[in-house]
Image (cartoon, rainbow, N blue to C red; front, side, top):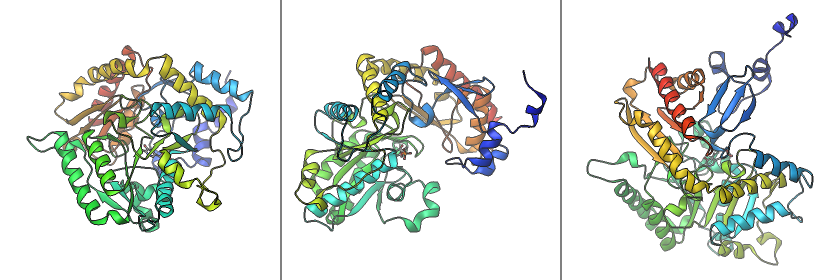
Length: 448
Ligand SMILES: *Cc1c(COP(=O)(O)O)cnc(C)c1O
């Protein structure tokens, strides 16, 4: 029973706004823009305090692969909790981290057989950058220390990762803190001219990269890319041909290739690793987000035996002396192992083929909507852009669309004029149809 005095109590949202500084948010917008207190989740559904259900169309920031409160992942964490919750990974090891490393290495057929752990995605990127830099010092080429990144790329927001990120809104205030990098054209397939294919765009972009390598390769340590989809960069998709060409250029010019698969890895693209679409392996591959199923912070950087051996020495200083307190946390590794087990036993990649077809069908309406352009899909990511002339106010559109989505029971967070869905893999066909219709209604309201 509700007591009268409760009416004067601040709500959870009020208290959050007073005490929690929320990420990626202009807090003042919450004067008019809703903040939702979530009390539980089940499968693809989130429930707020009032019991309203929201279909999680973006996997809670691209992390949740197998639904909220997944019984198998829950049980794996509970089982691990009975054994050891955490132990430092320097001087110690444990079953979950060993098994996870072995399984991931096997998924690359041993090409990337050494796994270094951290907790968040940006830190995994920092690790790849530092390892590459250090490798060239150890190999007598200390002048090879600059990084190349793609226009419109995103690799996280710590200072090293932000330096190789080309999304203005995240960089602008911090430019003077960031190291100098080379930025090369994105192979974004939306650039196709009449008569061209996505592969042509990839070739043009690779030709630009080659010009840079030709001139500057003796100063370049590595190039970092998001394979196939530049997710934070408005889900810009591109041809796997680009990855093949870049791999070849990296071989020819002695430059490391860093594949940041933090968003596109773990089956999101249709293969377990997005690089598999191109049939190539990078020198460094980063994973986070989906690897622990959206349960616990875990990130990692996988690398080759060549890189690993360069650091192997009697000299302490020649080791990779990087660490984070929660590196290789056993609970997080157990969650990741439970996810890999679901991939094995649940035939996830195969089933996702049918699911991505369901997604395409559910969003067929957008393909023929004259306000929409660049409808695109890569595996379990579907995106399209709204033509600017249909947006009353482009800067408030994402928030308006989010708010209308809440009314229609879907969690969506457009990036500028790009609407995308990147749902958990456990949606039923009915739920996917429901999602497509709810997004269509939300859009009608947001543009009304
Ligand atoms: C999210 C993301 C990151 C950063 O991960 P955090 O855990 O947010 O630090 C890095 N690279 C890509 C491609 C990402 O999508």
